[in-house]
Length: 272
Image (cartoon, rainbow, N blue to C red; front, side, top):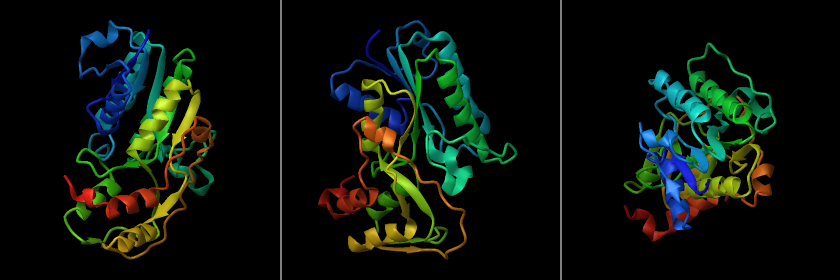
């Protein structure tokens, strides 16, 4: 077997990853939905990027199918050398400030509707690690951002708004709310390193820095924007993502505040 297979190459991360692998002259197979050749070919190293994010709460059954159902078919029927499953650092949320390390024992409330995402990702991780005959690894991605049209999530949407307006009001965003952000290029670098160095177990693809909305507004202010936020409120403590395993692969995610500030200061930021 040789080369790479990217399942979910039509999505943001899957598409960016397939493009990067091809740019370094790797062979990349990007099957479309329902492609029968998926189960008749030698797939090499598989990146399982299929999944739902922002709309999981209104599409719970599709979420489980993408995160678990189709993965189970790949693990059971496909021929592959390695499989890297893309999960999420959201699985740490219920642990609060005590969470964030890949070795943490996770905890979920099965009755909470939002946990269909966390639980399905956790089951996908279990299948990958326990049912792949030692050929699986898990990448837990934090909040990935970019300002390209295909990027999703709060920060990506905010950066695209900044291309159109110098004043942005976010009434539902609490100043003290924090997220760990990582730029898409750093995620691709981390995934590539996981494959090239045959990473085992679970690896956080995160910056390791929790950026508060208040600090984010300051980054925008220094670059000439005015970002106003809503009223502050009590929020549960957030996990702090460990990044030692990522660093051991030779990848250090850049400080998201510096990346954002650099983008806002670049005249090319306004190019569509």
